[in-house]
Length: 215
Length: 250
Ligand SMILES: Nc1ncnc2c1ncn2[C@@H]1O[C@H](COP(=O)(O)OP(=O)(O)OP(=O)(O)O)[C@@H](O)[C@H]1O
Ligand SMILES: [Mg+2]
Image 1 (cartoon, protein in one colour):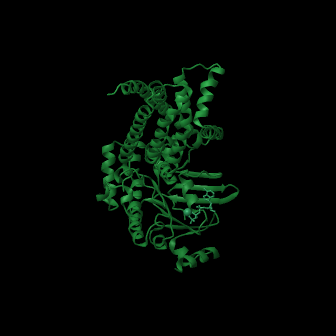
Image 2 (cartoon, each protein chain N blue to C red):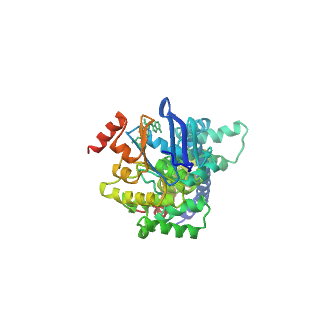
Image 3 (cartoon, rainbow over the protein chains, first blue to last red):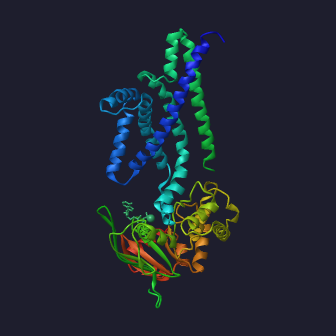
């Protein structure tokens, strides 16, 4: 291996660890918050619906980079001190939760109303009906859109470089400057990003096949 | 019309119901006795579905009372779920659970709601499928069945809870003509076996053959009740004559 390339790949490896950690944690957070938001948005309680709608409107309509800058430089100003990594991961989770919420809501709406009605007529409680009838059918239409959110989130972690996180893209920039290897770093990161997104696409395909509607 | 000695299984007493400011049921008094088949007839929008749906409280009423076996309908909650388990409902659009096999459609509520052991529920489900002529479809998914087959499964699903009463809301209206008979045959058989049924239908043949009593609704009011013979041979109101002439002319 020519001198220089190893020096580039080493830091990229460290960056990749951060990228994966950020992606995993932020996606988990976005899923949890997204479920709560979706419950708010379909709830019969008007204030909850307003809260859910308001949240989604705000977070979906502001560029992620702007949110990152606001949170990274704004939170310390209001006395909230987290590590840079934690702040950025939290921001990602907050941002992508709005998208998760909309995926869930759309998925639930694909289940015909008659399904819930038949469940009620048989004596199932609301909770049983959601768990045994609505969600299993809604999940199928959510798999691909959720994979889309995951891919978007994974790629968007590269924005963290702009606020100083040394994740993969940040490392690529850094090594480019330091070792004068402009293409190596970015070529390598591109391959890794594509591997991440292709893998998630494949996994989603598998899951979708497993839960597919049988005809 | 009252069958002496027997108290009503279902009794509606001065039931009123509005959607927004449109009143769709006016002072409905209706009794269905155990073992009786009551057919609700009336033009579109006359309130037939609404009555059906009020009986298992898929719709709430504004005033009046509905009792099942002498007990007023409970409010939403566990008690209501228990009542709904005793009142089966068959919908126009079948509403089979699309992600579950036919057999699972039949065992879900007995296992989850009534707490029947799975094995026992499965055996019973197979019996019921045989009874509606679909023993070989236990492992099929609903979408693999014809409309008539789906509706027969839906009837079996309702029967799996051993209901005291079955509600049918236009069970054959979404079916191709050649499939209507297979569903009506099952219903006629149920009626002959003494199942208590409240049926909304446009199938006049079924109403004549299987009904003990016809209830004719017009704009949310009961205009006539009587035996099929009384109603079809000698309707008393202009509205009923009009309705019959329209529906029998094609
Ligand atoms: N969920 C609802 N919201 C508002 N209005 C409704 C609702 N359901 C029914 N209605 C109205 O109530 C009236 C009675 O409706 P219903 O469905 O009981 O009539 P129906 O006799 O079953 O008619 P059809 O033969 O067309 O099924 C109609 O005017 C209908 O428009
Ligand atoms: Mg109707």
